Amino acid sequence: MSDQHRLQSARERWDAEAANFDDEPDHGLRDPQIRNAWLTLLQGWLPRKPALILDIGCGTGTLSTLIAEQGHTVTGIDLSPAMIAQAQAKAAAAGETIAFHVMDAAFPQFTPGGFDLILCRHLLWALPEPSQVLARWAVLLKPAGRLLLIEGFWHTGGGLHAQDVIAALPATLPNVTVQPLSEQPILWGGPVTDERYAVVADTPAYNPRGDGIVTQ
Image (cartoon, rainbow, N blue to C red; front, side, top):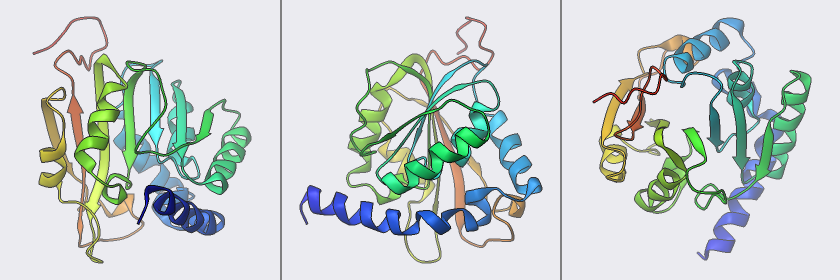
């Protein structure tokens, strides 16, 4: 399958799912308890505000909007125009200004070194050549940046194991931690039995205190 055919097939698939995408509890975060659980989780990873954050594969913009509400400047990209339209409407309804773009996540078109944090949830597994994709994403981070990947290996057989993601990370992101998420049913709207996790990869200069002091 050619790259253009792959992209077109993916765009058509996600365009078709956009209208009902938020029906999943962890997509729309319509339940206040689920929304608060995701907010608490994200707050443990986000840099000191205001930070410049890129949400890759933003879908309908739920996490983009949630993060923007915390005082950060957010950019969101997705291959699906229908998803982006939903995201724009959601941000506008929340009174947030977010730059959303229709863009191929595997080849994001931004100036290198422009973001404090890059977030991607449940998309890396679907992209070809993850190690090359991650290398391109890492270039977009500031010298003291963080890559946050929320992924899983699901009962359907799709996905990536955490160790697969770690093995694909570029050497420019040597500081890596993994947080299991399967045993937090509030995040998913109920119990799950498959592998769900977050991989947090930092540059050597990343400083979670945000006070200009580089931590080792």
